[in-house]
Image 1 (cartoon, rainbow, N blue to C red):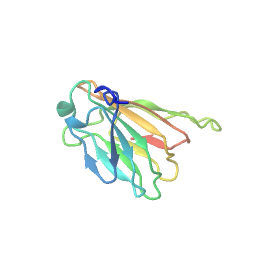
Image 2: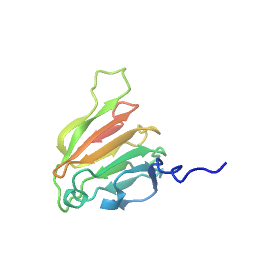
Image 3: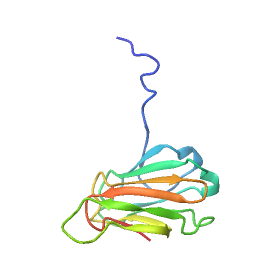
Length: 143
């Protein structure tokens, strides 16, 4: 049976990240799979290049066995523009999930990151707004 031309219209853009990368405006709307055991750094486009409405979601697809996964703002043009918080599913401590009113780095910690942990990043033209979820306490830090 033939599929209509619309069969693939509802697929999401997915990209496997296996090394340090600087994202561009064209990466908007992509699910980024953090997929390298030695960790990597992902640099967001500058806010002025990204513009209002730019977004991405980052998933841990491979646990870090060394180093960390880092998502950072473009230091050449943006300073402490990441705002938001992370929900932690772990409930056996009194620690709350991390939040920030302005930071530069989102770090998934080696040995605490869990496949499926995520952070979504959304630009309003002035700042990066984030929300996310981790399974373990301290798995994601905002600095």
